[in-house]
Image (cartoon, rainbow, N blue to C red; front, top):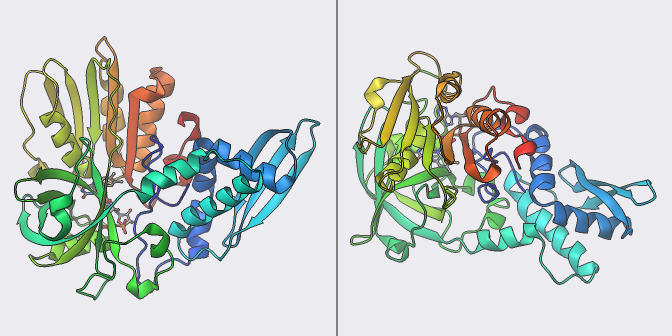
Length: 406
Ligand SMILES: Cc1cc2nc3c(=O)[nH]c(=O)nc-3n(C[C@H](O)[C@H](O)[C@H](O)COP(=O)(O)OP(=O)(O)OC[C@H]3O[C@@H](n4cnc5c(N)ncnc54)[C@H](O)[C@@H]3O)c2cc1C
């Protein structure tokens, strides 16, 4: 449905973008759209074919279409291509009600087009895209603030949030992730409240738009309504690249700093007949891996591969005869540039029984592992959930996205 967010294996983890920055050297929206267009189109066609078909029917005026596709995107419109039963090809441009201002805008604008098309055809049943949209709109925003900060290792900064709306927080899932929204660069006050929606976000002026990204809920303490999250200080703690706005915010966060938390969402869904787990992650996936292992059912073996820049960033994981952890240290190589995780997964002598493979790491790595398990090892789609947690600059759309697994 949307944007440059790169996680693709699970339909439910695809709607909100990574933060757009409000810096002056940020790429233009036209550049951003051009860079993300192929993956957005692939995603839409793969996950919402019924919605694409409805829009094509409404805008070609044909109800005998045998193939329909979203073929292009611009800041003003969608381009559609459809084939009718007689083999004729029909193309249509569908204008948005207003120009796309940020990649987040694509989601509400595409839903608007879909709903209008469905209604014009007299169809009352919602399309899959609209159903997903309804689920996302049901997600709440909690206004809270930082209560404690602890530097756990050189790269991991644990930030504890508490107070405010968190007393009504409803947790769910083991890899639950939350979009952390902080004040725009140079500001100390939040520019959003609990009524926040991604529809509004796209229309906010650049200097009003909060910074932020998804982070994993490491611990929830309902008795005191506190949440711990582990922030990787990429570009701050290591010598590679510039920190992103959220890593920069986390590095300086102090008690009292206000945040909005949008979530939670979850992707980890092992089938009931799972015999053992394969878990793979880099620093960003380690918080979720920790939670998953803490809840590992007795007698379920887990083979775990974690890539870190430095051994000093190891976090204590639960120990049991069922848990087999391999730490992969990339040393001087920048994050997102090694093949350590895919090599380790390839080298694993897969035990008998039904596996569920979950991963959270750089997008290209996740795609490589997903392709390997699906195509070379014959895993079913429901057995593999490899989520792109961030995208290295060298990772192309083709690397990060693969509709064959959709
Ligand atoms: C479901 C989910 C759960 C996540 N959970 C966590 C978590 O618990 N802890 C956590 O730290 N992160 C987590 N992430 C990853 C986090 O959202 C990204 O790292 C995000 O890009 C950070 O935002 P930013 O504003 O700092 O950088 P951005 O503005 O997004 O990126 C700026 C630059 O930094 C690079 N970059 C981004 N992240 C990294 C990284 N980790 N290492 C090296 N370079 C990087 C990008 O390639 C880009 O060039 C999660 C992501 C998802 C989707």
